[in-house]
Image (tube, rainbow, N blue to C red):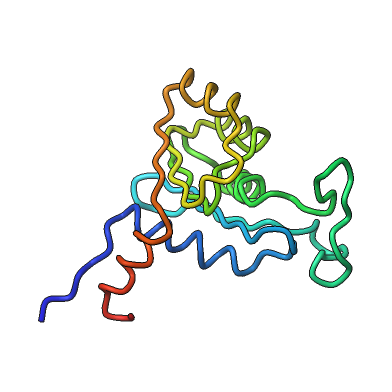
Amino acid sequence: MVEKRLEWDQYFAAQSLLIANRATCNRAKVGAVLVKDNKVIATGYNGSVSGTQHCLEDGCLMIDGHCARTIHAEVNAILQGAERGIPKGFTAYVTHFPCLNCSKQLLQVGCKRVVYIHPYRMDEYAQYLYQTKEVELVQLPLEDVQAAMRGTALF
């Protein structure tokens, strides 16, 4: 029997799902993987500032409808990438469509493609910015990632 290999998008999207399991916010488990030339540049998950209280332990600190404790997964990935360097033209693989602020930050550091799993709160202005900057948006539904994973040797 010939084993099936995951396509690159499925492979990195699956990594974003795995990384989301480290998230420390109760409201959403989000993971992000920044990739250039099929190599991981950086990863991130949503959680509190290192060394401070986590939502999982102390509950979310809600201000104006948002958890003030949480740094979003995309921002944590960008911050990790800042330590190593982020090449222009990378792809961001995220479990959820990036919020407006994360979208602006991804665009500012040179993202050219976003592959997301969940179409969560798809901000119209974020979509406009992606279109204006000619960034490709690709939805890879969870069911497709799961089906691809079931076709591998591990599942």
